[in-house]
Length: 242
Image (cartoon, rainbow, N blue to C red; front, side, top):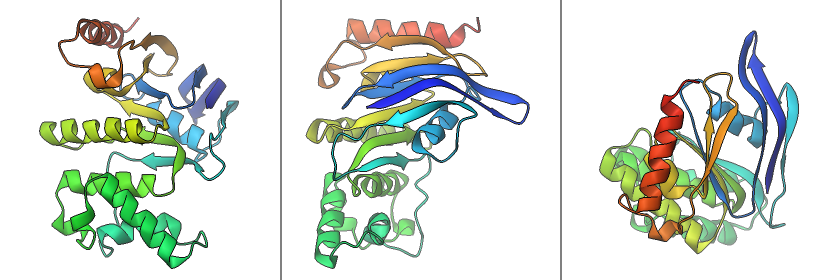
């Protein structure tokens, strides 16, 4: 579970987040959406411990004792070009004291989960943009995270690749449910993957509304009336500056 309690943050004189309080339940994916500059990425950094909040606090309660509390999937894959796909996925395991055989097995498992087994020895330059992002997903999964923080992971991809990778993230959640925060600019993505959608105000980001998506993730289509209504509601919230 993730708890955010009275969270506020600023960069110098510029307030970015203001008095955010919310919870993400165990095995829930919470989509976070709002205009540029409203603090969505800052929120992930604060929850992930990359920055300390100026006021308020965040707490992560891992569901499993064998898991890493949090890990990230960024907008860009940030792969090391001199390492193969398998080498990039192995990177976060290399200082954990795992026996080589176990490390290799976990890397192979993570690559198989994103359908990249046959590309394990390929270098990033030989992979498409979608494949490189799948390597990034595998690298996040290999540490078996309790919480997955996803910062616009599909933003740099073409439409067909975005749809394919979004389906992968949903499939992975069905296979091994994780707790997730999914930051996006896209209402369509938000209503596809989020159990709830938090809409933030323009900077400083405050919670404007929380929209529940009461349709099983595997039953969601663009034309489903509940999904269409939720997407329209989110568009209205994002488009209204009040």
